[in-house]
Image (cartoon, rainbow, N blue to C red; front, side):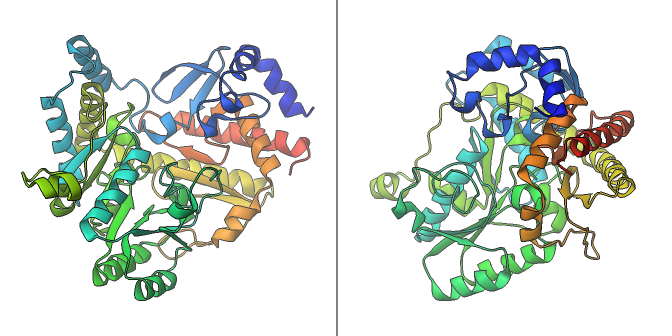
Length: 444
């Protein structure tokens, strides 16, 4: 057993005990793939602002931050007050509410492409709905997606991911064209195949920008899809309301036909949305024509669509983002974190660097930095993917937890407006200690 593992066992006895109970209840003993840690996951108990505590009483500076949903931090007063008031009036009223109208207004105020809105319950549902709308609108069948770009776990868009694709029918795979993110491959497919309904991508690059694409790529895609009457969809589940108030489409000035949203959208509660051009979203609308309503219309139920709790939390969060410099503060904190991490890597003579758009920070280990004139990482994607030994990354994740830092997999750090400069400085020191432990255990 490594020194990192020894400390991990010693400081998390209640998590170990709880994980022992869970392993026979849940596959892998967890309820989300990302929460899987060997030898056992950590069980969290409470949180406030940018800090959380586990069931053993260990304190963490939280860079998972609700899987990116909590850009305001944990327990923002306006969100909590709204939820406290609404929960007394009902958690599910089984009908339309004024709360959903206010939520939609906030979205339409911020997102450039949002002529109309349709609420769903998650990001996965949003991308599934967007594909169906695009196919119904165009009368075409196929979708283009890019390798490693993540759009949820459903059959169509899990393809091209380094994840389990068991259970995806071959016939479904025939309708999905997976390409490398370059304009030449897209142009070639669109010239050869007239059955492409839509193209979907993460607008800052795969996994929220871990495998970056330049803004010029978005501009080229916008032009090319318009030429071929293909619906362009930005998956802004990660980037929406985070990389700017209006997401990547506002930050880069490229307006898609539709965009999908979740995470920040619902203020930390479950919730998602598809937004976009009126003509496309109105494929859901009844026309009173029996043939249209039964055969052409896109039916869309959903028990928890725009439920009152998510509506009030989302409205509160988006109103704050619209009226306060939330994104700007997060970006400043992210720059401080990246600078500190890079300094640690240089001083310790470890190959690697911190990078990322806006308030999502990635740590690339085993590679040298390369940036273009706009500060976008241009290290080839193959190099980023292959650089770090998975054993070393796993050791770093546990070493960071031992030092009171919770990240997504050790290499993805998301900022919130509730983090402080002191949190950032403490995190940089903890990162250096974690690296030292990884090195002593022989992983570096």
